Length: 350
Ligand code: ADP
Ligand code: MG
Image (cartoon, rainbow, N blue to C red; front, side, top):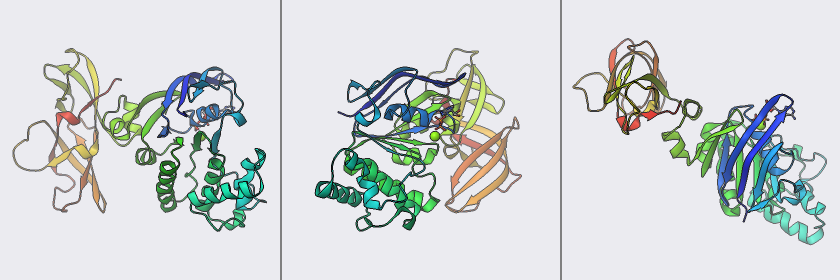
């Protein structure tokens, strides 16, 4: 049993509230990302779970047992910090063995465990090197081996890939996912990178100014963001504000329909539409669903896809993402129509 739960966890530094009664569940054996902008309290929450920082209020529960008062060395947590924090004067094997030695495991028993951990991170044969003789990605894998060698119940990762360049980061994402799968460790992964959170996680929890604002499977929170913060932070979104009138929402860009039930007539609402859900029409009859007029301003070509920047009839910017099956299409300055399905219109709670 190694699921993690935080219940009404609060933390202040001086007058500033960093975490405000945070409730969250990190299921056993799953990979959960804690996603939020810089300063939203991710590191603080992770350190409270690990026992490095005490909360002002609330409880931390691991495997069903309240560990709020349990010191960090008894929590059986493995942690990887953003800076790898390897011991520079020690070899790879000594770095990885550090936690074992502190628990009194030495000699052949320790060597066997270190060997297994290095094998898991694909660093067999690197035992005698020192950190400065390794690449950034290899150092990160040593830090990971050091965190898992003691067989923790929970693995805490604080932006472990952010210091790596793009290509290496992508390789390490795949590695991390494999290691998590093979080890079956309950993993909490802190990141401010939405793409990383979407690709790696079973579950994503979005943190905004010390509160979890949404939690769910990646596709679920991407397709159905609850607030404009979640919609904008997790990818791109076009927002439309308007008032419910009859069957549609009356917005300055035109009437917009949603698939579900609308609030009462007269209610002011905001909806979001992802850029890849919209289609650019230049000729032909209007399709069913939502259609609004727009003017094409700019096309940003990026190989597989292009981003179209448009302005709606109200002057607001609209972004459309389109796959480049062929490059024939309207040019900047053209008057076009934008179409999308009512089911792709997300009614936001704020
Ligand atoms: P994140 O990891 O999401 O970037 P942090 O948890 O590191 O956020 O920090 C959240 C807020 O708490 C920030 O405003 C930060 O300045 C503040 N903070 C974090 N640790 C301390 C500390 N030890 N003393 C004072 N303020 C802190
Ligand atoms: Mg942080």
